[in-house]
Amino acid sequence: MRIDGALIAYLEDLSCLTLSEEEKTRLTGDLEKILGNMARLDGLDTENIPERSHPFDHVNAFREDEVRPSLDRALILKNAPGSGGEMFAAPKTVQ
Amino acid sequence: MLDMSALELSAAIKAGKLSAAEAAGAYIDAIEKTGNRHNAFLAVAKDKALARAGEVQARIDGGEALSPLAGVPIALKDNISVCDMETTCASEMLRGYKPVYSATAVERLEAAGMVIVGKLNMDEFAMGGSSETGVFGPARNPWDVSRVAGGSSGGSAAAVAAGEIPLALGSDTGGSIRQPCSFCGVTGIKPTYGAVSRYGLIAYASSLDQIGPIGRDMDDCAALLSVISGPDDKDSTCVIENPFGFDRPVSERLDGVNVGLPRNYFDGGIDRDVKRAVLAAAEELAAAGAAVEEFEMPLTEYVVPAYYIIACAEASSNLSRYDGLKYGYRSADAKTLNDVYRLSRSEGFGLEVKRRIMLGSFVLSSGYYDAYYKKALKTRALMKAAYDGLFKRFDILLAPVAPTSAYTIGENIDDPVKMYMGDIYTVSVNLAGLPAAALPCGFDGRGLPVGLQLIGQAFSEEKLAGAARVYQRRTDWHTRKPAGSPPTGGKTV
Image 1 (cartoon, chains in turn blue, green):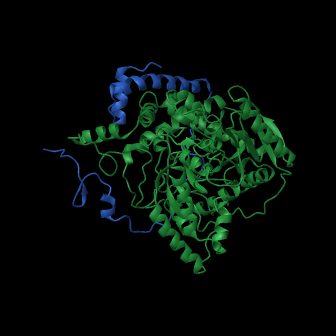
Image 2 (cartoon, chains in turn purple, orange):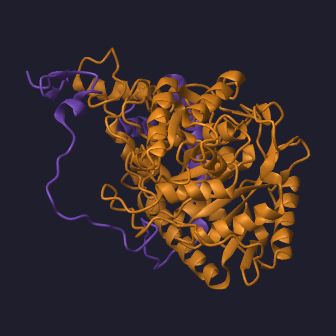
Image 3 (cartoon, helix red, strand yellow):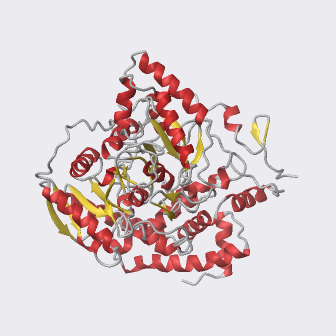
């Protein structure tokens, strides 16, 4: 599959990334090769096969529905690059 | 002391022959003595480890019944959270990040009286097969420092092989415990999905990731797996009902065990010496009484693409949490909220992580979802069904771990497809959620270790470990040590 600048730009948006020119060149070639390899799956007949997103059929080990303490707010904020009072700090989004 | 197995070391501490602090000190000295020349350790927590060893010793002296691994030093792949200990995933994104809680596996190590000595190198966010993609430089193979240690748990395998630690934890999403074990000549187990809690394991691909042990032999690895396995209220996918016991007496024979050997794994791209070593292991299992029968492994040309589609899709979702706001790297140049997101992620992630996030975004995007992601999920269903059929015929499957021994640093890093194809024998195990053990089984012509894997049915770890123990009692590959490693016992090659 051909990867062009528009597709790279679209994937940058979806991925919330901004690539350098060097990264764009590199990843354009890489993605073409990798997706070419992935296209092998076209040769596999999967008609009427259900999708499997998990290794097993029983997927949940539920705990009792009881209220328990969670992490303390100060701890949650401890690794934040910016915080103010009881909240994460972010640039203003509304003027 | 450094020659003792982890189980022997704990027994010696309990018998008063040495203290837990002496054990921790000896291993920290061993790391310092090698100058961390394999770049296996990203951090050594000397003061914390010695203080912790003192606490464990007090519990032992007080008569508390602790686990068979009490007092044993251990180190952890740097994607496993330890409260207040820097946990970086070998990424600029998490440089300086100190989790405010510990992984469940870590809490269990601590309850068992083990002593955490430090954190180990890896591929960035566990994305890679060579431990070269991390921001702290490549982990080096103790058998030849110009070669990779394998990945992504390369630091864990290198540290054990170099005698810098008796036991380590790694994680395995598509072979990341088994392949570095094979490259470094050590033993490891990728547990059944749902056997070990993933709480506190920094996520790469949540339907595939599992934490598992890496050690010098299966006895030590089984003891460690019995410590960390078991249900956990904090991980609803941890469906195991009880921790593994591994308490069956060790047999000398494999009579009545049906072992399947995938004949097509030995055609084509496999290195001649790897093939020879693994087929010799099949003969050894047969000599121990196992009925070894060849079969054709289905779907081999499809598993690598299916795995990378699923893993990258899950990674693109999991890594969306790195937003420059809650924790992790924030760009100093960010002025707007959108800048915070985009610049922080662009500056904080390395190239391989960006490549996988973009691939994941692609296969999940409108117009491509059916052709890639949905197709991969159907391939996963076919692979799972194929394994279900195989385990009606066989108790265990014997396979190579990787097509080659360790390659040189930089050799494959610019060719992602070649790198990804190196996972051809390991990824189907993760797609099907199965357990697999990696064991040393010989050396190639350059003197580099070669590993085999034993694959079992879900939650058959006790049977797998039993077969592995029989193999290791009949062979001595797991006792070989690279020249220059600190322990003086065993054979030096």
